[in-house]
Length: 362
Image (cartoon, rainbow, N blue to C red; front, side, top):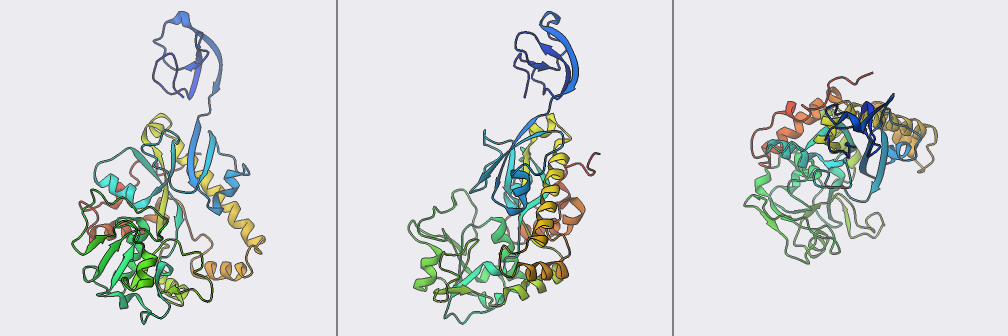
């Protein structure tokens, strides 16, 4: 908080208190008659974070992990907040693409943390009709493909899967629209879309396009409610997408990052140590969650087998936080944004986390 007496400076560590407002103040230029000396003690800032319901955040949300140096008010959200404009949050979950493209445009309102709270492979996200003859990303060349948003992080990575398979993205007729009829379409106003990308009219959905045959495939972040039923009219493009994703990992060396945590710049400027402290709390929450999952693995019938495969292929930390462990992935994402014509200018990967401290203070 800032001093209500109007000094405008953050009240982090101080030994003066305003006798009128009873608030701690760091401005020694205030009228000395309104100040009195109190015992030296730190004032822990309160940080309001908005994050979605990721399992690895549960220890932090339940208070089993306590942050160091600050009080945390964690809101569990159904959708990602607009951290830059929201008055309700000091930081939160942010689209990786939105954050990087903001930096490319000179928008420095947010400071990104190398903590990708959402990451995952995207081969599984390509859906076709059950009777479709298509079974491989390479088969989507010259096809009609729907997706839920053009510059979105997840869809950027999914298009990267197609490029990795040798598909020329300009050969595809793209349709941007909501996955389901009940959803609101992403606002495409103001976006410079390529000539081979159309925006679906109101009332048109990707699922409907698949079922009626106006789309050959669709990229969807969430599956229809009946997708996993034996009689579902839709199926994954790649039947054994696990093997395809393992092969992809062995080629590229990372699990794609989709959403990261950001803080408002004014908060970081007030408390320069805060990004490292938040990263530390997120890391400890993730570690406790992973330790418990390896011990209490009966949350699904075959979770233990999934854990075994994950550790054998990726290692014991498949979603690492920090600068160095994510450098290769960040560089690849910047390259994809440029190659796919989404970035307004060439992107320097070193700019993505230029405001984050290289070392976590003790």
